[in-house]
Image (cartoon, rainbow, N blue to C red; front, side, top):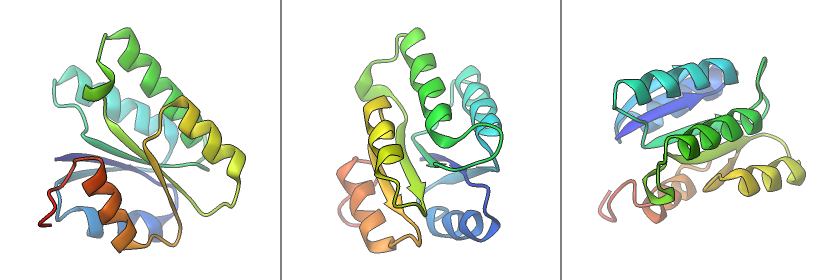
Length: 134
């Protein structure tokens, strides 16, 4: 599985990298612009990300705007909904409006920080990214 982690907080970025590395190859970026660059590069190389973890609050371009740009690109390229990258928004905020916006744009799930790894694994299973045995 190819995973993109977009997270501006160093501790959260390191935690997610360590946690998700056992499930696949992880790329790290620190803001929404870098997330869009990484997504485009992976798409051009025909190695799209299976999972994208987007922090909602990031510098330059926030996670919700990055998600919208990613979904717009997938639509323009004719990628069917079931073939799109799965997106999990991460947030330390109790901002339900941001989370609601992310779901409306096309996020599959969200995870509150600090990340509960057991719940995160359940989400990965529900999204079909890992098997029930993992």
